[in-house]
Image (cartoon, rainbow, N blue to C red; front, side):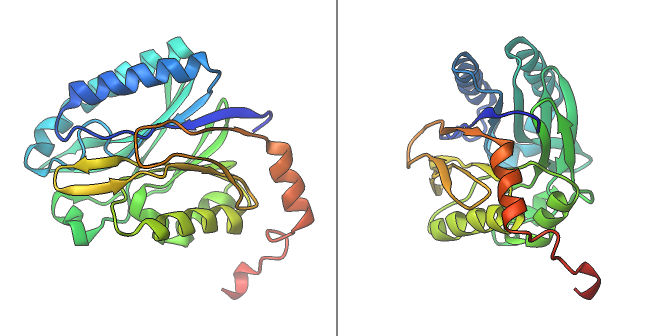
Length: 259
């Protein structure tokens, strides 16, 4: 991350199973954000259709086309886009976040930790590899929703040089305080920027609280959405992160050989 960039989280009420409606909304918002100077935009988890389990295999068949459409939009707008989609994989699917950098797929990450309480493990396959993607706005590490509860993954991304960790999510009520606390913790302990995009409103039978946010390397809240559709934006300055790491030397003082 060589220079300050403007970043945004795109929070919206996902229409369950309705790819066309969700794509139309996302496309319009990305155009607006690009006009406002945003260079990195993070979308929610499974933003194209939500967890429409009964139709998920069928809906996943459109994902390759959606990725190509996002590539074209990313190239046109000169913007980096990250969000997760259902990736076809045999009788199940992966929950896969694609990092799309100005027309190219810079990397993809398949969600490792599946939330059994919501039956994710019955419908989805687990990913096996973490991701730190080199992009035009810096090195981006990706985790997805429930991954947030596993700090080892975020630390691995930080150790491998992530400037920013992005978190596409569908985090429902009533665990709002867990979301807020864990996101700040991941930023504080790794001394980097965190951008989290949640959904909001009712999606099927689940109620989502929103509160997408952008957090700085000291744990400071740079921008935050409320309960409704919104796009919190903030300027991410790598000089601030560098200065903070030099003043609080957590990474130099680590002793991984003892852990």
